[in-house]
Length: 73
Image (cartoon, rainbow, N blue to C red; front, side, top):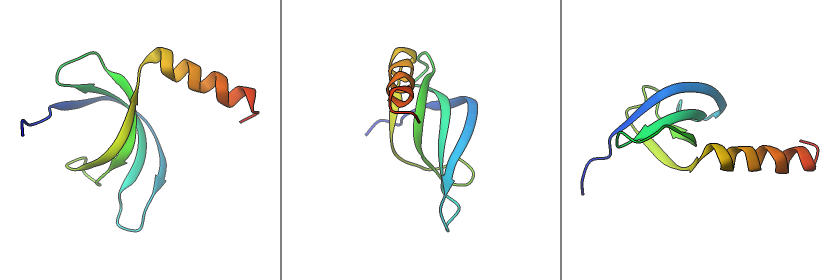
């Protein structure tokens, strides 16, 4: 399997942290030298490993914000 290249271009914040130090974070991440996208996933303490996550475009993050605002969150 080919290596996946990533660069966290902007750390936005930590949503939670588990007992082993892994953190669920919201970041802007460039995957394989592409335009950075919003990314929510678990990361090991030094960002050397990652868990499964979801990557959202700016349009999708705007839609998510709209939906959360609609339900009062």
